[in-house]
Length: 117
Image (tube, rainbow, N blue to C red; front, top):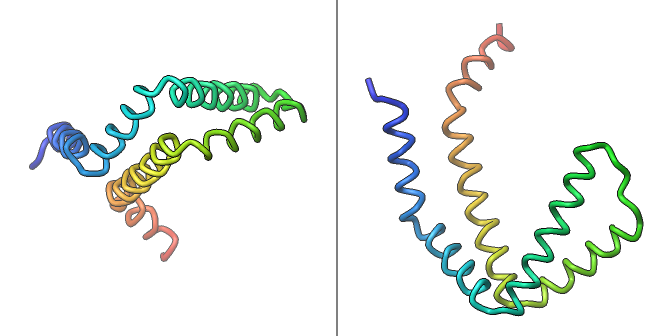
């Protein structure tokens, strides 16, 4: 029987060496090496985190905050390096979601049997 933790570490290593991760890493390094892109990206991430934190705490998000977020998104979408990074991040997230579905398939099948009986 396979040790699940060993398999998980193998999966981690496969992810690190995958084309998807390597592409994301290169895109991230390109953004971080350009001072303007880096500053814009960090502002975008900070805005995202602030809004997520407010939502999690049940606080209202003001119209002013929504407008600031919208403008920040527009700015980052105009930066080719950041756009490329976001595209590669989304692609890797899709791969990870697919893997998660594969991993949880035995549980879905097990609990799905209860629905069929």
